[in-house]
Image: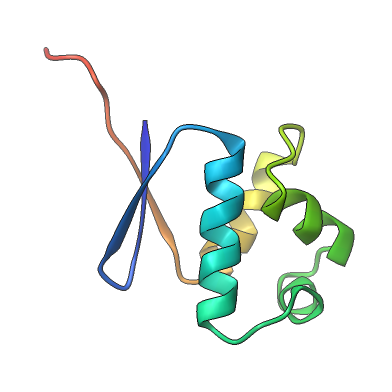
Length: 82
C-alpha cells in the first residue's frame, strides 16, 4: 500500500486510477492545466492524460517525476505485522 501525502492530505493508493486521481487533484489545486504540467515536467500532454486516466502501463519513472514536480511525496507502508 502506498500513501500519497501533500499539504496535509493523505490518500491511500491501491490502483493506478488512485494515482491518476491524486495527480489530477494536485495539478488542479496548483492551477495547472495538463499542457502546463506536461511542459513543466518534460513529458507529453498525452502522458499526463494517460497518467491521470489511470493507465496501468504508464512508465513508473516518468510518473514519479511528475508526482515529484507537483510537490507530492509517496510513502510506502506494509500491511503485515512483523
